[in-house]
Length: 219
Image (cartoon, rainbow, N blue to C red; front, side):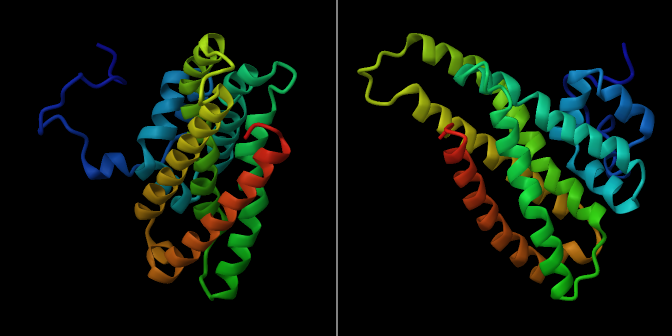
């Protein structure tokens, strides 16, 4: 059996320890994940502790950020193509663009409040939002394509409304991953003041994302 794949059901003795789950990523596994979608999804979706550990350690941030950006851009394409083939870029811009527009504000306010934070522990969990949202949208794309092909114009709820709902679920999953990463990150980000700041920032992020979705005509 391939050592990289655990058995379907782990016994307590076989379960990974907390130290293993919080081990920073290595360059080789990050670059390999760019060619293996299954491993890429595992890193982005299932290892918030390791994302947090990599950000806190400041190790291999280039490949990690590349992985998150590539995931955000590529896996958002299928659901955008359900809307329109020429608009294949729109959902990626929605997820990634909304996040990047709002990250500088979070950094500025954190510095203003005296929170001594490096950019890496913030940028990695922030980019987890569009990366996770893109992966969820990838899973939703076949469902939306089926609904578009089979729903009649006279149906009470159209496929575009359902698409907006699925995109909101995807963004909510990304926000949940942000909180999971922050919960596993040591230091300043665990302080209550910073968590309140993130909550306010997320409200701004959601407003920006909604405005961008309206601008791109996908909501």
